[in-house]
Image 1 (spheres, one colour):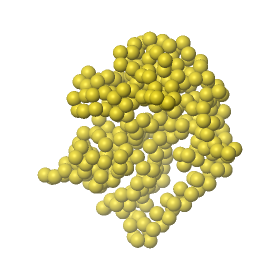
Image 2 (tube, one colour; image 1 turned 135 degrees about the horizontal axis):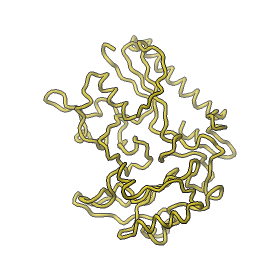
Image 3 (tube, helix red, strand yellow; image 1 turned 90 degrees about the vertical axis):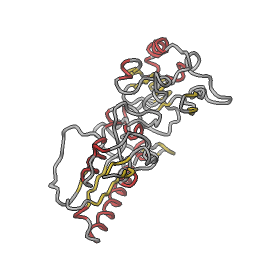
Image 4 (cartoon, one colour; image 1 turned 120 degrees about the vertical axis):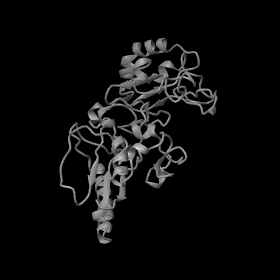
Length: 317
């Protein structure tokens, strides 16, 4: 589905045809495939007499932007450069030997907890920028503002505006090196690519990017549509409550494949979240809506799953 939404290959396009979200014929075949696969699963559950006690949740960890193909802009079509290109000469670390200047490496940083892997700019339908040590953040922002038209600038987050969402950037104990110094959210439809192979992307704050469907199904539920605001962060607590476990007993956030860092307090023991169900290796930052796993929300949130199809056996539902 994800690839089918953004596909441009050998003259074949996936995605949608208009702002209303009318699917192309190519994307429709993928939707039908997924629908048939879910149908096979539910049919087998019914055959085995398990459907009545099964809670099915269908959702996604992110959307794709822009849905409207008329809003799509890339390097050479609508924009002429990227934020990383604008800053590379003065404010970003030098690129590696033979490396592309738009994606330089950040020098490895040594912290009290050991070395951190180098972090370079991450750019899709958003630009996450880690500046060189000692770089003037305000001056870098001013340069981006001066090139706003060229980069399709929508909004810049740095300093206090960035810290309302994430930990302050920097090194411990004064900052979090996973947080970029600057985040550039471009205008809707701008993708920082020149590959001509994709017409949508994810990782940013665009409505099409962060707005996903959530379907919760069980034979005992009456069909209805909920239009009130719901977040995917509510999926995990819902699953745990349905399983008779207390969502408030969740341990600190962290990588789900590390059961020593996340678990449920049940009696005198602690059950790793992996025993309940999760997508191994997914970080909170990724599931939160950022493509980059280098970020993590400031709030203590848990997403027990970033997979698209979840089935849980629930006794007495």
